[in-house]
Length: 136
Ligand code: ATP
Ligand code: MG
Image (cartoon, rainbow, N blue to C red):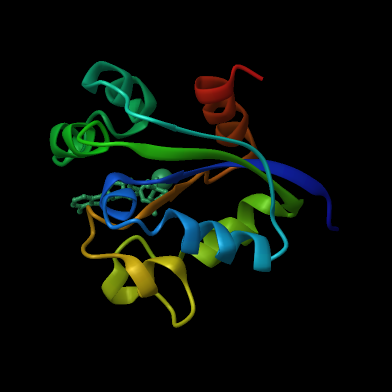
């Protein structure tokens, strides 16, 4: 069953720094996503720690939070049928080396940490993450 969903996407510092946000947004639009809200911001490390709290116990948590707060990011509220899965598919595997042809991470990702985009991984997390950035 297909249903209209909203999901959170983040264009991460490595991509914003390389001025890829326009090209990445075009990929979303050409894949049927509507950009409902967007803003370019820089978050501080304590906000990144809150956002990535699910990864608190991972060995890369500290680096991950330092990285996400290292420069401007573009956060977007995206809408589409089955947006959560469709976004995960368009992003590609976490490690750009494993990402499928035609995905954002295959095209633009540099490494497992500098992988250009974040996308919510479930309906529940999409709502939490959208509320975090947009107070829906
Ligand atoms: P995201 O949550 O950013 O959309 P993801 O869901 O594909 O990515 P997660 O497992 O949630 O992957 O990991 C969150 C982020 O942590 C990844 O995007 C990546 O930048 C980083 N990460 C994941 N695994 C590693 C690792 N082994 N070493 C370094 N960084 C990692
Ligand atoms: Mg994730």
